[in-house]
Length: 155
Length: 145
Image 1 (tube, rainbow over the protein chains, first blue to last red):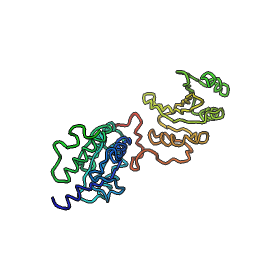
Image 2: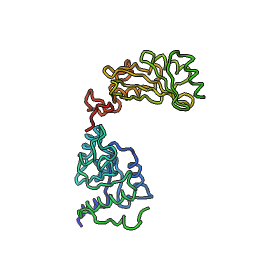
Image 3: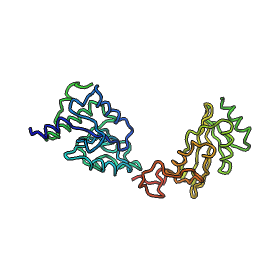
């Protein structure tokens, strides 16, 4: 494995952006970052700036107000970049679909690599999504079955 | 305070006001636009100093907006209801009586296009910056895409 890819796989830094969600997914994302679920074992660190991040973690439906800002945050990230959509609202608009100020899912604005459903998704599901992103960074596409979801590895 | 006492107190200060009590601790005060300030002032002076929210019912068939001022007064929910014309929806500001009403007045300006006269801060509060003028999303005739 070449060195760059190895480095990227071992340090997928994330930037978290709420595009207008209800905060439930954000709480789960924060839970994932704490020692109980501990995605730092994959090298995941939460960064304050999109310029430092490899993975953009988006929660919430895209609202009219946040659309331009989401685009801008995405464009500030350095290549190669990945987008992780957390929660059903982020994937499709969810219960906000058709709301006067909602644009729909994040993929109407920026390309999404991994979708995680749920309202909110369990931390174990988010970890599964992280592993999918790692597989994508490794260039192997999406894993058929990630090691995390086999058995009850995370509870 | 008991609901009957609340009604007694309201009636003691204001004459010719229609009051309905749908259930315990819930009081509906029906009034007209001209008397709105007087009614709210009287309620405030007696202790109903907390405004919970202002809501609007768009009764499009009758061409009427009904504006509801929800006050909290010693375990009772008092709702002061006013009907205004849908063609020229204007209400006076009640921030002179209840300063906390400002947020809700700005909200009904955004959502229903009801003009609040002499509002201290008429800036947009909830809609996005690029929202078109003259489009009010909570009106019944707003078409959701």
